[in-house]
Length: 184
Image (cartoon, rainbow, N blue to C red):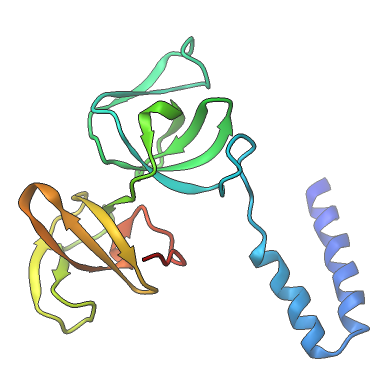
C-alpha cells in the first residue's frame, strides 16, 4: 500500500513537470526510467543478467553460504541461469523452470549459453541464414543447450559444439537471452 502511494505521488509529480514543458521534453522524461539499470552490489554488473553453469556438478543452496542445505544439484555444464541478486561471493540464480536459489560465483561462467525454449510445442528451426524463409540446417528439440555467438534484434547465431552444428535461431525461441540483447 505504501509503495502504491509513493508511485502515485511520483506519477503526479511527473505529470506536473510534463504539463509545464512541450511534448518533446515530456518524451524525454518518459524515456528515462527505461534507461535505468539496476547494478549488482558486488560486481556492478547489471541485474538481472544471464550466465551459464561452469561446473559439471553444482549445488544450488537455499541461502548464500556453504552452511545452507542444497536445494538442487545440477549436472549440466553450460546450463543458462539468470542472476537476480548478489551477496558477497554468492549469486541468487533462477533456471528456466523458475527454480531459484544461491550458487557460489566460482560455479558460474560469463559464457553466453541458451536453451531452446521449454515452452515450445514443436522443434525450433536452426537455419543457415538469419531469415524466416532460410534453409533449415537442423531442428532442435526444446531444452537443447546452445552456445550463443552473437545476437541481432531477432536472431541469434548459435553453435552446438558436440555435433559441430552452427546456424541461426529466432531469439524468441531461446531462454537465456533477453529480447533487447544485441551483441557481436
